[in-house]
Length: 323
Image (cartoon, rainbow, N blue to C red; front, side, top):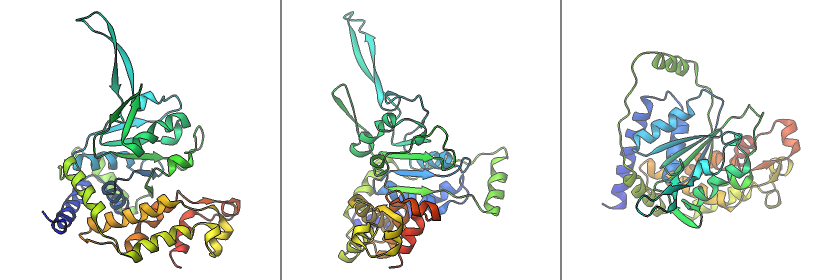
C-alpha cells in the first residue's frame, strides 16, 4: 500500500478510535486529539488536571481501543525505582540445587504506562522512567531489556495539591512531548457524565487498531514530507521564546529561559502527525501552531515578574503566535 493510501487509512481508523473513546469519555475532544497526535509521533504526554476529570479512564479507554497492553503505577513517596522497572529475585534451581537470579519485569514493560501523580515520588524514582522514555529499554545488572513497541508514557500531575510533592526536574519534563491541560467539563457535559456513570450499564469499547498497525503508522508519520517554510516557522517560534534571540517584549519581561532544540523537533513531528491523522500528506504552519501550546508550555521558564503579575506560559505562547 502506498504512503498516500496509508494516510487515508490512518485517518479512517482515527475517526473510529475517537468514536470508541466517545462511548466512555464525554467531551475532552482536544485532549483526545493531542494524545493521538503524540502517540503516532512516538511522544510521551504529561496530563495536568484536578482530580476527577477522568484522566485515568481516558488513558485506559485509549489503550483498549488500540489493543495495547496497559499498566498503571501509582507514584507515592515510598516508591522505589525497582517498583517501576523491575527487580532481580533469587530462585532455587531444582535440577542443580543452585540459586540463580531472575529478573522480574516491572510495570514499565507495557505498551502504555500510566504514571499516576508522578510528582508525588522523589527524583530518584522519577529518574527510573528516563531511560525507558528516551531509549525504550531498561538496564538491570548490566543486562538491557528492550521494551515492546509501541511504548507510550502518560504521566498525570495534580496542579493544586502541593503538599508532599517533588517538582519534576527540567530533564524529565523535556522528555514529555506534550503537556496537556484538562479543564472542567461544561454544564451539559457534566450532566451527561453523571447520567452515563450512575446507571447500571457500561459501554463496551471495541478494538480498532493493533500494536503492529500503530508501529506502521508511526513509521509513516516519520516519512511525511515537510516544506522548508514550515520547518523554519517552527524553529523561529522556538527561538522567539529565548530572551537573547528575540525582541518580543513579553519574552524580555517574563521569561528566564526559553525552549531548547527538542521543542523544534517536537513541533515539526507534532505537525506531521496531526496532518496525517487528518488525512493530509504534508503539514502546514497551522499544524505547527495547533500543537505549539502543548509543546512549549512546560519548556518555558518564567521569572518572578511573570509570577507576580499572573502571566502564564500559555499566555506568552499565544502572544508569540501573533508575531
